[in-house]
Image 1 (tube, rainbow, N blue to C red):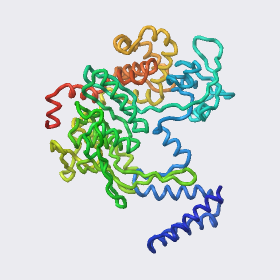
Image 2 (image 1 turned 45 degrees about the vertical axis):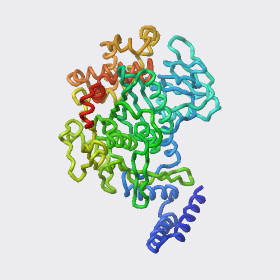
Image 3 (image 1 turned 60 degrees about the vertical axis):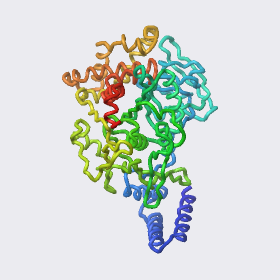
Image 4 (image 1 turned 30 degrees about the vertical axis):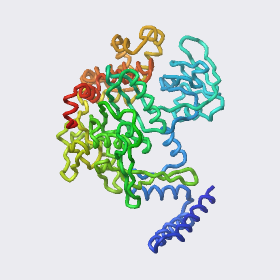
Length: 531
């Protein structure tokens, strides 16, 4: 393999040397080839030649911009998987509880449901490998469980109602990966959709969600892109197209060596009429910024939340012969009004770039709108109402909602970081699932009647003590309401689904509540958009 790779590198070097357009390019290619040859033939120690090449590629890309990158074959596969519509497996969602794999959800229609696995089952063995109580990494467990469609895996599970282990033979199949976390009616007229990423199936999922909500009487829509880090560019185009009239510019891209390319709205979308609010925060990036920027520039809806991440560089994937990949920045995104989405960066200074969100917090930007300052040179006008918007990195919302720092504490953060909230929710369900299923037949009843008791909270504190997390009474009391809300939502997620999780957690989400208030106030909504 090393000789094949070295031969390929030599071929590429010779090809590029011959086809180089000018003497400077030929000199540069010759220089690279000589450096590689010197290292592999003369270096004092034995060299890993493929790694030498990988390190050289990484070194070149690191000096260009924050988003040009190199991934090896395995990293490339893992990176692409969350954006693909499906993968092969057995169809479960799981978590770890006391070194045991605990099934949270069984995907409807999947292989595990077909053989009788249920939420609450604990997987002890996979084929002949013991996975319970051995501190195995999630990655290693996934390798055992996943496999090609049509192959068989044997698992043994412990079910709380039975003494003996139950054995199941499961034929792996294609498992769908969903990008919409929640779809529900926020009130009688307002639908809510939370999109977690722009994946290959996102448009199809979105269309189904819109049609479902319309049947339930939806007139207005809240689209939640908080925390959505982006995904496929063409999906962002297509999603924005659902809201914009035919012929309107969605976004354009342009680079030094890449001509301007316009994405234009096409046929009639599913939600071109009706009030629209998009929720964003500092983690909303790339494709999320394309959609929210287009909606804002065309005065189609209101953006609520905090300034988005600011990723406006277009990467082109270049697959290499060994299935590794270069993602090379080739162009920049611009909103319809001409705003440059990418936040500033200094070439080669990735530390400062990666520190940006911490700087925003320290500078007060996430808590106070008046901490954000834009020069007049970055001032733009929206295309219909001529409202003032700003470029210079990210999408600044029309309505700013500060991050809620009143309930967050270091103690609460440690509970989350150690995974204790999940563990308590799983533990509680493990003991009470049958009773809860009988008592709470739907989310409405659960929301109204279920309460996080002191016993549940004490179990959380005991787990924290076992993990050597020092108890801080003042911080605990400050975060207690938030902790209880999150536990109630986590239990709802495992008892029902992710949809129900957001129905509970959103009741205390200031950005969501602000959007709901705005969308139901015609005068205020129209005033913001200068209608």
